[in-house]
Every structure is written in C-alpha cells, then in structure tokens.
Length: 353
Image 1 (cartoon, one colour):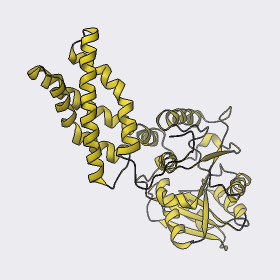
Image 2: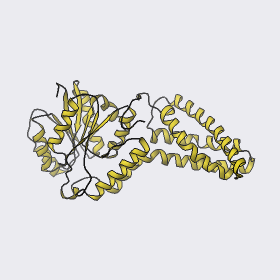
Image 3: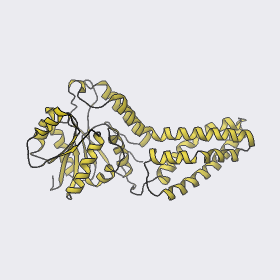
Image 4: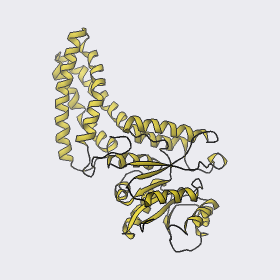
C-alpha cells in the first residue's frame, strides 16, 4: 500500500455472523473501525463476539441513528485519532462485499491519484428488483441533476481519500441518503471518480437489509430533487403574485418584480438550506441573490413583452414559457456563483459540473 494508512469502516446495525467472517478476513490486512449503530441484543452479541485483535476498533451509538450517522462517527473518530490517515474503505456489514473486493479497492486506493473509488456491481439477472430499480432510477437522476455518470450510485463499498472526510462528516444527513449526498458533495469539491468492478452478492433476496423501500427511497430522492421541489413552491408564489399585480396594474415589469420579490425570502431560505446546503457568507449570498433576482426580473419582463408582441399571447400566459426557459439559467447561476460554498473548488470529476 506504499506505506499509506487505510482503515476499513463498517457501519453495523443488528448484524449476523457474516459480519464476523468479513472482519476476521480483513484484519490481517487492514485495520477495521466498526460502528455499532444501536444494535439489539442478538446483533450486539454478534459484535461482542468479535475476537479482540490489534487493529479492531469498535465505536457504539446507544440508539440507532442511521447508516449515515454511523459513517460520520467513524470518520470523525479517525480524523481525531489517526493523523497519518490516507483514506478509508467503507464496507457494508451484511456480507455483500467480499474481502477480496475490499482488498482490491484498498490496492487501487494505495496507488495514489486521489480518485474516489466506487465498487461497481452488475445489475443483471439474480439482483432483487427493488435494488435494480432503485439503482437505475438514482443513476439517471444523478446524471440529470448533477452530471454524474456512474453505473452504481448506491454501492456501499467506497474508497475515499482522507482529505474529503471533513466535508463528508459535515453533511447534515444521517441515514441512507448520506451516501447519495456524498457523491454530490465530492463532485462539488472537484473529486474524480473511478468505478472498480466487484462481485454482486445478495443473500436470500437481500432480506436482511435494513433499507426501508418507501421511507428511505423518499429520503434519497428528496436529496436529488430538493432544488426542483423548493423552486416549484417559490414559482407558485411568484406566479400568483404576478397575476394579482398584473390584474390591478396592467404593468408587466412591475408585476414581474413584485412576484419575484414576494417569493424571494421563501426561495432564498429553501434553496439555501435544502438545495445547496449553504451555511456561510449569508450577507454575500443575499447580495448576489438580490442582484440575480433584479436582473432576471428585467430579463423576464422583456421576454414576456416580446412574446406577447410576437405571438399575440396574453401576458398572464406568456410568462409560463418564459419562466420555463429561464429556470435552468437561474439554477446554474445559483449553483456556480450565488450559493457556491467557500470550500469548493473547480476541477474535473465524474462528468464535469
């Protein structure tokens, strides 16, 4: 491994004996940090039955907090206690990741280059339908929303250079959605992704998985679609105020400006907190946001007027295609300049931003 220090991180909730087999196979090669995420009696007994060995660290949550919280607990612990850490390899506790594949990821990570490594499974026959469908949908949304072209967006086997761990540990999600948000944050930081083929292993149709299809899928897709949902609410306020103002004033520019500024506080708060997770430089962001709102309001008013004149469409109707046209422009401006975090930097990775 070129002298670099890598640690296997395993979040565990009510594991069975497959966890013991994975840990025992990995310990001769790599240190393991395991997080007991509030397991019940049988799962806790399984973890307590692990052999005491050099290189094995067990951290505990008194209650179940979620896979994302367990990963972040391990990352924070390693950052505080392993100053020479070069990277981590995250591994699921249910035996789906074979030790040989974990070691393959470790070897690639040890070669340097700074890539984030993802263990890529094959989703062909034999894969439970909910896993295949969920990965296919998430993959397409990641490509559409964030420009990330990955074959396996939900893999839990990942090799992550240590320099990215502080940013991942700061992500405000605690369950399965952390893994999806992690990819977006890493891309924003300029990380390059490399997919490493691994075995596809499912035991008994993945019946032992703690993934709750309805609730956890909603969490993941909220992470992917939150900007669109936040924007839809603000757009509804914008359009309603526009129609009311237009009915009373019959002045397009004034009506557009009133609609924009009435939805400003709602949109700014929702986009800031839910869409881009920005938490610093509020005064700067608000200044740039106000500037964007003002400029885009004038542009929208001019386009509404031009559409009305060219196609003889009432201004109440012509604003709809204008807003649809300007939506991606607004999104790119907010993403690249208004809500761009202070820690982000430009760089290639995963398909370009």
